[in-house]
Amino acid sequence: MKLYKLLKYDIKIGILKRWYLYFLVFVGAVLGGLGYYYNLVQRGLANTKGLTVINIFMYLFAGKEQFNPEVNSAFVFPIEWLLLFVFEVFIVLDYAKSNLLGHGVQVILRMHERNLWWCSKCVWVIVSTVLYFAIIYCAILLDCLLLKIPISINFSNTVNEKLIDLSFISISQIDIILFIIVAPFFTALAANFLQLILTLFMKETHAFLVIVTWLFASTYYKNILLIGNYAMIKRNKLCIEGGIDSQWAIIIDLFIVVLCIILGMFTLRKYDIIKK
Image 1 (cartoon, rainbow, N blue to C red):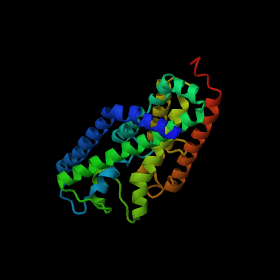
Image 2: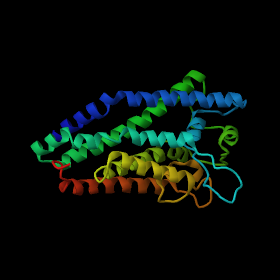
Image 3: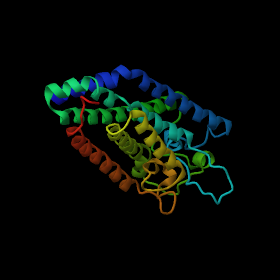
Image 4: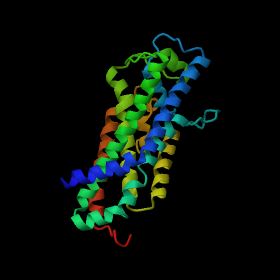
């Protein structure tokens, strides 16, 4: 019951009262979908046979090939991909820490349950992340309904080749779901929990800069330590030799989440909330 009350409060203050942030996510996703379609029209691909909603999602999570200094060409950042994850970690940036130093102090002192407070914040991060991606997916589905783009698990290789230089000879529906739903969500969740735990040791802005720098570095280099790679289709083993295995990436993301939850519990036991 105590956890339920804490979580109810966190959802009310940390999500419902900050509705405008999620509304911006919805507007941005709708405009992004419309921008994608305009790009198709400009290239004469709007009526391509096989074009579906999956093409939009693949464009969104395509990412970028690893930076190669030997190639005599400028590196083009995957702006859409980067903005999607940067804004996602921005939304959950300061609520937990500000609550800990504000209303959370009274809650912890009265209830003497630091673990319950921490568990509530962890569940709040999960709910916020689920809501963030649900809004994006729903906004793009709305675009497809308005633009009469088929909603199907299939996709057009022709469109992918022209827009993101990406083509699959054979790919299962499970892999498609891992690409556009599971891997991006768990990667964002891991980034959120890393930021959450960092805010216990440093200022929120510093924690945010650390995570953004980590994501930014992921656009340059293919490395298992740079978790942004896990949510890039172009870094996947189905696209390049020695690429990221989606299943292992999800396991690592979950390990990071669990590790952060445990570390947070131990940290809060010795955390001086009064002095802070």
